[in-house]
Amino acid sequence: MQRIATMTRHKTHSGSRRIHRLMDEVYRKMYQLEAGRPGAEMGLALTLLRARVTADRKSEKGKDWDWLKTVSPICLKMIEVSLDRGSTVASILCSSSTAAPEF
Image (cartoon, helix red, strand yellow):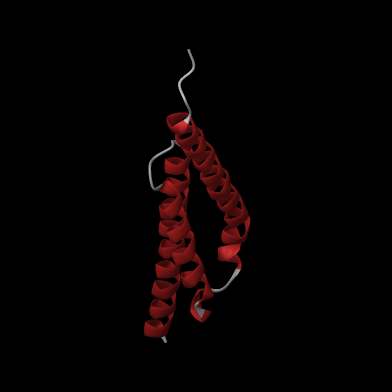
């Protein structure tokens, strides 16, 4: 009986560490995106996907994963805004490089 209790506690502790590791990674990628780091959109998207896949595992479901439901829409909005901003900057650069110079 003692061994089962120890195994259960270890499994729970392991799941908790996994959750916190993924949370740290998501928040780190959010910060990188906010700082304008190149490629941060893809990094955040992949990290969110990895967190979602981990959360979908049957043994990983539970109230500890509610943070993912909260942070995902925020992350997606950050990615969309960043990509829109990049598109705007790229279109401005492209249009200004092809436009005739003004005298």
